[in-house]
Image 1 (tube, one colour):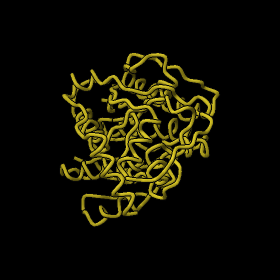
Image 2 (cartoon, rainbow, N blue to C red):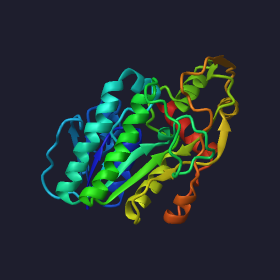
Image 3 (cartoon, helix red, strand yellow):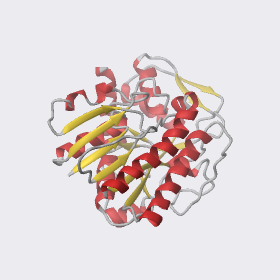
Image 4 (spheres, rainbow, N blue to C red):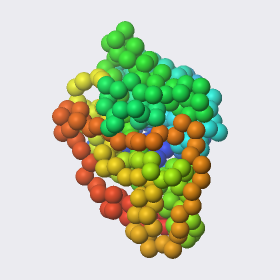
Length: 308
């Protein structure tokens, strides 16, 4: 089996490349290193089954030989990135998805799109089911990412219906683990980096907004199960264990034994107030649910950050 993984040098993409190689796949990793890093895959470069191509998938790409699976994971994914790179974010969600679907069609390959819980926007339904259409501000500052992913889902379904492409869509909820960038801007690396320096942990808003955190190995297992399972409609993957951001900050300080306090800053525009996946579909169809506890996953992540 031969896979094309776009965004393969990113946080989640690099773990996916690793998992596919462990299953005996040949992997072609494509990344332009705008938010990904060659460091994330340098331990794979000596593997004969692994090929790294530096390329912006918003531009056409020709791949020689058979491809059995296309995994489209290329995109800035943290607010700090897509607020700096709004046009590139829209292009990789639009043109990049179009280009990768074209490759899947030409190669008669199965296609998996990495979508996001952000397509639900600031949700009015809780927890969020796949049947929920979302509450998104298309012209807000986060619209570049939210609408790029919503368009990516729409064109993926159009290729499925019109060209009979065998497609999968995974809606990824907050995921954490080794290889996150320290300057990523998301809550886990922010809190760990601040606690390591014994600085105050920055909480936006009053800290009552919630998130649900899934460890990366659980997510990768779900992605591979989704790729292998029948069915084309979107599937939520995430951990339904919900925490307020204030509670999460206090937990980080406790786990790390830090002397940090908590400081509060204004909540960014359109920031979701509650975020928790309904994973009934994943449980039923994939026989999947997260296994790694927050304490175990955070300790592994903290150890990795310390090593950096």
